[in-house]
Length: 321
View (spheres, rainbow, N blue to C red):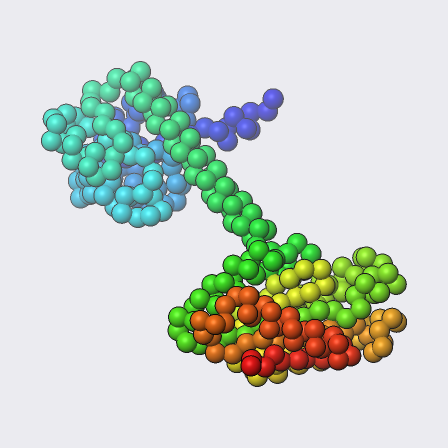
């Protein structure tokens, strides 16, 4: 095996001490297993931390200008270095000094004179703990990303990229409750691709999938306002939830969508129009206690049925009696 992976795995230690002899002692103890950097003042130590991002800082307490406590405080205050392990190495061995260092965020406190086996063992342990902590954080971030992907998949139609039926049902229920509570308008558009079975039979299922994807893309582009939900309701049928929208306005929006699909001029030899078209039904109006989820679905579906029965490729708006 090459030595490069071994070298890459070596921990990086920064020694901050104003006494050269102390640096020399620690360097001799650690150089066999770790990459060792050093700084002779608190300010220089802060600069080295920013430039080299060590895995562990061995920090003297008693230094001129900026002592170890101040260096530790600054490290822990900065989000970029707050998780960097700090170990105090000092001749000050009373409980008050050790307590102060630990309260500032140091993970350990080594007293002089230096005992090489103790220093080496503790540095090894702290670096292993840091390695495990970094790995856990990395795995947690990866798990969060995977969970987000799964959540999206659970709410999205795999073929068209719009919301799936499950998300639609949840969103419609929520919007009906909100609109009823606030006395606002709410509309629902149901869309059905005309003679889609014949299209599939004539051109094949891959062409059918492409047709559904085209319709999904048109819907996404047409309805982007906050709160609007575009969903694949089932098969070749799509639905659009339009908060704060009257049935009349929803009818105009549905008509615009119908014309946009016709404008795509996707050939359909089995259609009386020669291209792929859709029929649309709109149900909506001012939300009341009588207008529950079932009412919106039934009214939009009823209007869609009228469009189909009336010759297809048209928009019908349900009139609430």
